[in-house]
Image (cartoon, rainbow, N blue to C red; front, side):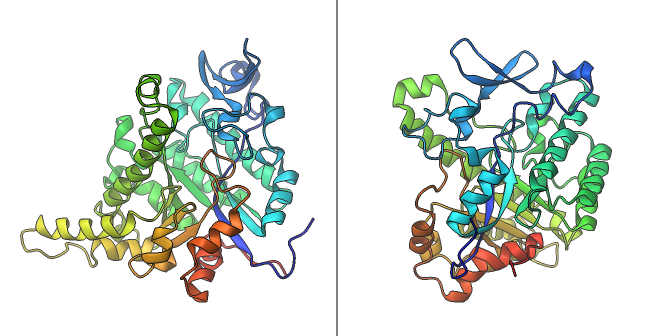
Length: 386
């Protein structure tokens, strides 16, 4: 299958891969095979990820696209997951059907900021896990490197190792850096502290944006059996999702007021899977409160927080219709990306083109082109097919 020549091409800025069972076990020395993430079938017949002695989750919970029952129901085994969740050829066919030329790829098992590897006390093991995942991504993308945009994981707990991995991955074709938006949650310095400057410098030198995916810091603890028993699964899921989106808004506010953007003016940041409706409020609040907190009520930098957003920060949307219809004049349109979140529970599936048309019903042709194509193409160096 190929994309029809008359279809408006789209770049999907956030999708996820269902990692294959042997991703880590096939890429680490034999002595580590029992310690890295590995898939096993439990006594309920489910394929679950194990990391050490801990169960990370059921494979299908992050591959529910097309599943007939609402979350938290989902595929129990790899065989029940949609092939496009884990197979590169099937993913390309799915993209062709939608008219999606390129997709940006994110993880599941290691956490959306790669933070789950911190559960190990073995520094060598943690680094091996990161490198194995990054190598897997390049293998997956090798079927068509024009269309699969890989975002490397980082051993952010070790700055020197992270810098070395950024430099290595830049050479192998990765186009972005996955990071945590809340390093302080793991006992590490705040974003604005000089501790992180070598990482920012390496990413800026490589021309790779830093990505804060939702759930990349302190994972939400809201989706609990206690809350579900009290309020039901649907209500709990709605609350948890909203919490995650707004938490990314707070991380962006932290970034905008950290001093990182003035120090690294060519470095871009992306808030992934967080929506865009919060952007006008966060920018207005950050500007207002920042000036109120300054003795002379002027910026200590060249620009205000909102202006740094317009220069260096992106945000992604998928299900929203209010913000794309009514707030495009309040959000820097050059910094908006479109995503589907495939194949996660909140993803667009079976209605992608309809949702695009609803959301961008009032956008100008120029705005539509920027949001669906040009912004991501410039950020990731994506070229349209001949």
